[in-house]
Each structure stands twice: as structure tokens, then as C-alpha cells.
Length: 505
Image 1: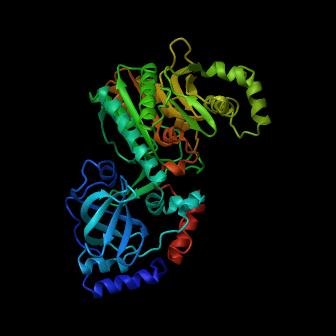
Image 2: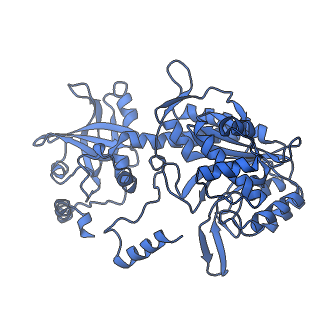
């Protein structure tokens, strides 16, 4: 892997060591300050001695005077290194410093004749030597995969990308504040599940050697969170990393983040109200408040008004409007599926209503630009939701759509242990590879002890951030999305193993 290190930088590294300079010292200055606040306070604090640390991403001038652009998480500040103000050995470091190196500079804060906020160096210390050459035209790269693969370079080279992920963090913080204000307790539940459930998805499988038992990476935290409601923790939420062994697209990554929350004595209507509050708070934190006071976002060339309340539309009515027939019309459902070349199984009740939902996805969802709540889904494909009292074939469930994507899924939680057991058994019998293959008897046992009436919801954080930040590809809002191994970066036998794994079902 010697090609990872630039020859000139390796030579400078050796020169520094021979000169007695540690290119990777064990400690940094303790009294460092952030770059951007210093820039903003340059006049008020002019003449003060400050310490800054950061990566050098710009350099101008040589000889007896050099200007360095130091970048840290907050932004950029200029430093001025003058031969007559620095110790000789420290000024000599400038000859061995490259773009990308980390340094610490201590000096007086002020402005140059051009008016730029500047730290006039009185001491200069190398903190970390960069051995790789930064891309010269990084800002012009359009290869999403390369930028995602080298996110560490993407972040320090592109302030816009760095700010994007800072805004994502702000979104999560704002949503946490909403949950805490509503009395919800943040919890952690297992990632390794002996039985996968809580959603319809193909799982990742693994094995615990000591216990000699198969395990699954969770596809949803739902069943564990609802166990907590049984235990008396009445309002809980989790920002959960979940894993689904399915396709990759601009909207899908096998590993993603869900906010799931469950509230006792609520239902899907209270979940809709809380979801609306969360989306509005997230939009505020993402910077979607416009100069005219409106709350809106631009996504994929369209503008979306996020001013509440969001409309609520019925699944069945939408199906009839866009498909042109009743979802109970089995002949027309079968004919339309054939016309659209949809691979469906119509023999079972679950298979039939899954086919109806496939038609809904094809005929309706593309028109649901949102923000909109689609209310009351078929009960047969909603095994964890309560049936509607007036219409038992339909369930108290909603999905929330924004930007043409489904962002949230919520239920009035089914708390009848007998009915839940029957639904689980039916799921297993249907032999659908995307359905649980084993009844979660422990969850049924938990329900037998009594689950209070409750509502629950899951929000796809990555998709929500995509829409609020106007980003078209989910990889652009994930720091490290899943990618195939890079050619030349793994040993030959490992590359073979990885290729076989990638082609496995």
C-alpha cells in the first residue's frame, strides 16, 4: 500500500524526524479556540493572543512571509507567518509543511491591511503530517460513489458537504427536543435479534459462536420498544440503526436510521400529530424557514410547503381515484397486475392485499408529493395494527409522504394477544421471504401481561434529511454508505470473498 503515501511527503516526514521534530506529537494545545468565532470577533478581540488548530488548505507567499488558511469544524481563519516574529526553527517548518497538514498557531488576533481577520503567528507547531496529496479539483468531482468512498476527503475539502452533515445533526437534535418536551424517554434496544420482526423485510443473518445460535441484524426495533410499554415506560423512543438485506438505490441503503417512538394511551391520530410536530421542528433546524416567513423546502425541482396542518387522505379513496376501481374488485386487481407485469400471488388473503398494495405503489404513490398522511391501510398487510372498529378489513395505520417518498409508518398498536398470535402465525404460514419465519412467542407473552392502548410510529431519518436539505441521493446524507470493495484496496483472496458475498442472495 506504499502508493497511498506521496513520495515528496514521505521525504519531508523523514527530514522532520532527522531534525528532531515529532510529526505526530502526543498532545495538542489545551487552550485552542474555534476559527469562525474568532473571525466574527476579530474587531472586539483585536490584540488578544489566541491559539488556533486546524488543517492547512491554502497557502500564499514564501520567503520571509507566508499566509496559511487554517480550517476546523467551524470554518476558516487566516494565519500570517513572518520570519521576524517566529523562532527560526519554527519558521523553518514552513518548508516542510504541505497542504493537508495539521498545525497549531499561537499569536495576536487582528486584521491585515486588506481587512481580513488574521492570527499573526508567534509560535507554530506541527500536529500531524499528511502523507496523501489532496485532490486538486475535488470541488469539481461529480462521482457520488467516489465522494462517499472518500468521505474523509469530501468533508475537509468541501465546506458545503461538511455543513450538510452538521445540519443533519441539528435535525436530530431538534427532534430529540420535541420528544423530550412530550415526555418521551430515549432508550436503546438490541441490534442482534433471535427472531426478526416489526417490519416486512429481508434480514441480514449472523451467528453467535459461544451460544451456537443464529441471529439477525434488526430490521426494526418495534417489538422491543413495545415490550417497554408493557413494563410501564409509557413513552419511549429510539434513534435506531436498522438493517435490511435488500436493494440499493437513490432512496435505499441496507443500513439506515429510523426514529421509532411509542406512546401509551395514544393511537395513530396522536402519532400523526407528533409526526407533524417532528417534521416541522426538523425543517426549522435544517434551515427551511424562508425570508418571507414561510416554511418550505426544494427537492428534485419541486417546492413543498411544510406549514401545518398536513392533509389526511384515505388509502381506499386514493386507490379508487387513481386506479379507477374498488380495491375489493378481485378480477380487476388481477387484470391490472398482469397489465403492469407485477409478480404477485393472489391465492391467500395476504397475497391478494399485498397485490393491492403493489398497485397502490404503482398507481398512487408517485402522485403523493406531500406532505400528506395516507390513512387506514388494508388490515391483511398490517399485522401489528388495530383494525378499524367500523371497517374491520382496514387497519388504523398511516404512512406519511413527502417529496414523493414514504417517510413514516404508524399504527394504533394491536394489543389483543390472541389476535396478534393469529396474525403472527398467518405471517409464518404465508412463506413470504420478506416476512418473519418464526412466531415471536415472547412478544405474545408480553402482550398477555397487558399492553395499554398505544400508538407507534417510525420515521426514516435519512429520507427526511434528503427532502429537507434538497439532496437527491441517500448516499449524500449518509456519512459512510455501503459500497463495494474498492479495486486494489484489498488482498486478492479477500476481494474474491467479497465478490462472492456481493453476488449471494
